[in-house]
Image (cartoon, rainbow, N blue to C red; front, top):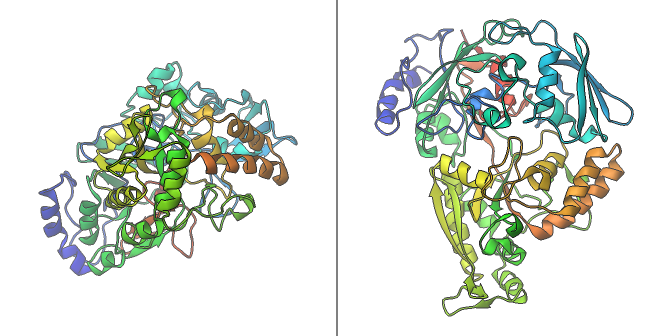
Length: 559
């Protein structure tokens, strides 16, 4: 403990020569065995420099500190557990018999951080605003000072977590009257939320949150100041972890044991939940361009990839096999149709990949690359620069698919470039992640990432809440998603999932890779209350939407 503190100044001096990270107020703790109560918790949640102040939960470039630490949902759903949802701004809820009417009781005595009361009018506004409302919503109305009745045009049992656990509660007195464009582009630099923290300051290098002294959970948060850092590469973050200058982060580290051995935080947990995939801009009818719009090319790439080698070399064996159905293996097995492949192939088969291309009318040229109608199967695969595991995986894919006559060029882009391209559809292949579901059910992925209702034509940025970056649109999938949303029994839902799985395992708009190793490192010497392997009360990484605020509210400094 003392040795790690003694090294803080030296480590920071070295780090600051390459990335401007810890701005004013970054002196280490006093040279004693006690940690001051006002010790700042240093966090990396993926932000890169320069940081731009944006705390708008509807914006694609929103800073992670907004999502849970500042804004909250009605209930908290633990995606790594099976417990009942935890009341947050909501106190209780109940469905009617057919799942078309949801009655919500709100928590009394809550205030926004500007001193205004949180009321049923805020809940109605948050559920009915043009930006956030569900397409199935008929109405939402307050029936008394603590009750909201929400009506839908079809049963919404399956949508419960999206309504109660993913819809941000926003203050009507701040947001009302804004057009959709204003609501999605406003930077919201001084956010008014109900969460445990408020924004104190923002610089190019970091942003700082301070405790909301009027937070509705009495005595929380005990950690009074949290600094979110901007770091431009995993390697830089790893250096700061090893020196003890990061207290909490969720990131890929090839040798996690080396963190504590070097003097960094000893707390560590790996919770594989989220799929890593190749996004393909798949739909030519919506403006996608390139060989990847041909399903045969996507199928060939899928077969040519050697996932076992990628896991071994890029993810150092920490990733887990993925199902092409996007159900989480082990947790969601009951939702996998019996007549589809349960697991993506772990070894590459370039011969089978080439056979698919030839059957589709492609011929191999003298340069070894397949072509059709004079167009070669040449593609660009982009990953975020500094994300070393994804960068390494992309280079391996480039090498592996070459054996099948497919030319892929791995390239990197800044986070902003990456975000802009997938929002607009201006890409061919992207190495990226899919947000895993909050409950043991793949429905959210099917609706948000595969439904044609959740996408836009290329050149039009996706709207808030739309995650179908591939521009995939399949009427059978769309109809089955609606059937699943309305299902009140497992048999009906399973029939819908079977249809979806047959379609997406053939069409492969997202080419499955691995279930990503979700590593979390945390300082359990200076702070208590973290999710651990023994008590995974919340999804542990620092970038977890909703869960990050829930965790921060439960932390306590060791005094």
